[in-house]
Length: 266
Length: 220
Image (tube, rainbow over all chains, first blue to last red; front, side, top):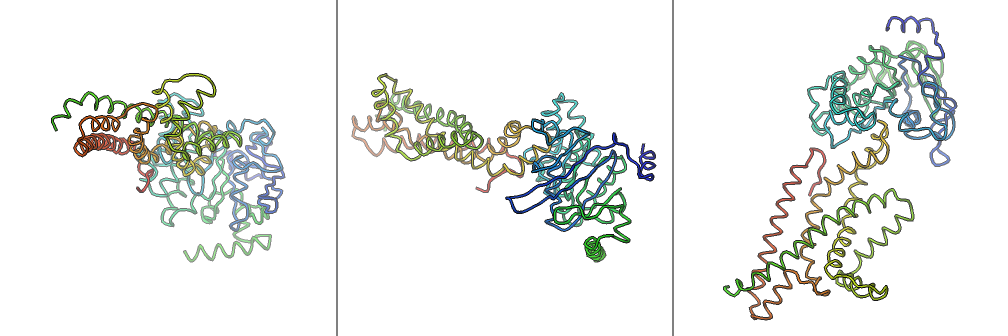
């Protein structure tokens, strides 16, 4: 499977049926004047790992929330496996079961254990019987190496552990795609490693992911494509090497220089 | 204190009434309070305004006047009769609901924002999120306030005398009227209140401890 995907990528070739998620000319404005997302179009193929980065306040998070229809866009279309989510009358709850979302601030359900957090959607949305839901939830927790902590409440877990549960919660439904909004940036530096390791495992399994992140070594290692975002628009896209060696746009060049300098200091 | 023995049946009746009205008030008030809190949050502008008027009426007027209005004024105007006991029980429930709505809504608002977003992100509907995520957290936060509310209800039942319903304090008044033993009667009755409220408060503490989830608690 992986080999095949790898091969396809090397040809730079993608069939239409491969497209998992797509957005066309997406706009989102806050309070009439603050444009958060400006005419963004993007395609994500099966097994793709795309990484969005750019200055804070550039609309990355809003863009991701638009894609999951957590913040509906003002204009433009979002297609999930060819099905339009922005059309009036779309069952958004149903659509969201097929989109995993991982939050920067984690947002676990505070009254439920790790297992309860992962299980909730399986029980109440997919309506699986209790035993099957539990089995699948434990499998998802195992994927993030949290099965031993399944009966702990969020407040009893470290930030990194909480975020791994957050990832398991997004994974458990076998969504078509997982959107991750800066999954490590609310964590203490020493805790980011375990979350990055988890994401690396997912990448190896061919999970389709769109990640907002500034973890540059990780990006270089796993991303098929990097997307530089600034002032609500995509400024430049390309393979990681392009950004690390010779970004085309002036803004990306400056931003990369700053990032690399910071990474070295750390 | 021997004279008290003679009056024990009277005291017992009063005690049962106080306990009955306050327990009914707290539980019915909770059910109604949840409905009012949900209506205020999600019912739209008109329903929310009506609920606020309701809350202001019951919080803003003396319970004695409420009892009077519901037993005499409204039935007279609309030409029907109603049992004072029914009015007593109902007014206590309606009154407590007005207060409990405030506690519950406050707690719901406190947990709402991120938990709603998280719930939507996994595909749950809004009603599902309220039922499975928001309320279980909010009600846990409310338990200590609930304990307070119960104490205050228990000690409000003397107001029922205005509609001729006699509670524990009314029993004391009767005894004093017949025996002229003011101090010892009041002390005895006060001990009953104290014992009962202590028992209930302890039970609520146990419930709170049992239902407590690390990370969801108020710093009381």
